Image (cartoon, rainbow, N blue to C red):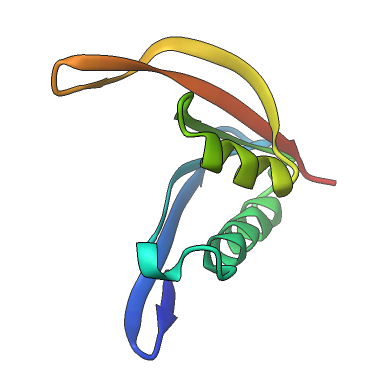
Length: 105
């Protein structure tokens, strides 16, 4: 969780899928705090925690249409792997997901 002056401004949720792969489940930063390094700090902290638990790589999924997120994750070393059609099913519509991976040295 990220806090500024006692206010929660972002969070990240992740877990280990197996003994060598971490999974980022969710990342959120309040709109007024985006593009200020909060998301980068959250992800770097989660990746470090996953590494400490044995992760050799980290996976995440995001909406294929979310170009800003794809650029953000790419800037942190995530590589686009493949598209899963119809991954997101919400309120009467479906959307494809991009699966991205980052190897952890």
